[in-house]
Length: 117
Image (cartoon, rainbow, N blue to C red; front, side, top):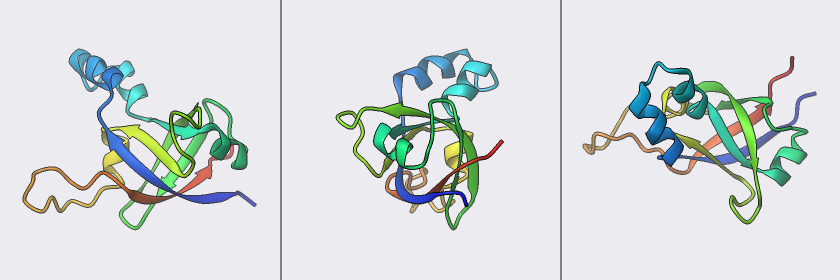
């Protein structure tokens, strides 16, 4: 049975995302950056995940499969996932922007599970 964990996803800007965006959204560097989720290393251990493993993130809006990479607990608290804005994080966001032009991208509750194979 695959372990699952409810976590909070925070999508945001990162410097690496910004520099790769300047090269183009269709370039491999941008695709890699925006499809990598950063997770607390202890949460990764609980889910039996290693750096580079694939995970599925899902909620009531949609789902996406991305790569995960560890962060120290001092850098990212347990229960939080950070992922740069991009196609993958957008799959989990509502389309309603409440007039701001930007969908809600903070504190999205997602189910996290390891993708086998």
